[in-house]
Image (cartoon, rainbow, N blue to C red; front, side, top):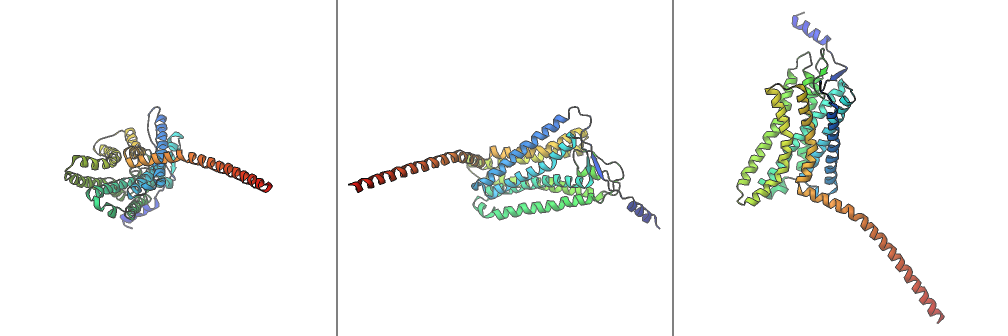
Length: 355
């Protein structure tokens, strides 16, 4: 047998799939449990905020528009992404359950990165909505329709589902014959495949594919849409109209900054300089959790339509008991009046009969 054949036989016979990984997390930080309590608070507020936005959009018929289909998708993605990450992080470190089953680890990684990718492309869809609204205002309602937005969101979910399923599948072909300690706060893609003993070149390629699909292409598309928006606004003569059009983009620009700036900062810092693992974990956790917390706050406070809808819902809830009370009183009055009329009629009839 040739040397290459012998090596292949050895590799095949020593393929190791571990039963579980160990998530290392922070090292040598006193009172670290307070940080996890903070994450617990962030998760509770994220669930309440995004649940509130979802409820308002669902209940108010005037918000059943293509624009708010995108907002609904973003709130749902934030809710699912936070639920995929934070409860497991709290379970891992607050209750010291750091061992995670191999299959559970891969699914954990898949859902965290999948919802992060969907959030990125939902922001791209929002920028497309603003681009059409400002650059082609007369054709907005014919271009940005519910079927068109639904198709864009569906394509986003399906494509990203395929990409991250492939990333998880490529991890499944690796052999782990050395350390099983993941140097991160969750089952992250990079720290997992770097533990492997066999060839990881395809996994390295997947890293570039994921970074390109989740960060680079979305940022380029958003930048291009705002270049077109800036050119279109420069052609508007009235400064008041220009400012009015720009205000419709402020919420989206804040969302983009909140999501992409920490993500870019963390990745650039990792590539250009050494970051202590504890600092990197703090940056990563905040990057994954804070945007989902802030998004509903930004959209509730910065969007006039949502504020008006919230006021309408509040007024309707206040008025409903009064209407019920008034209806009950009116029914009682009607019964009393009808009884009085019946008594008068019977008395008059008895009077006439006696006469």
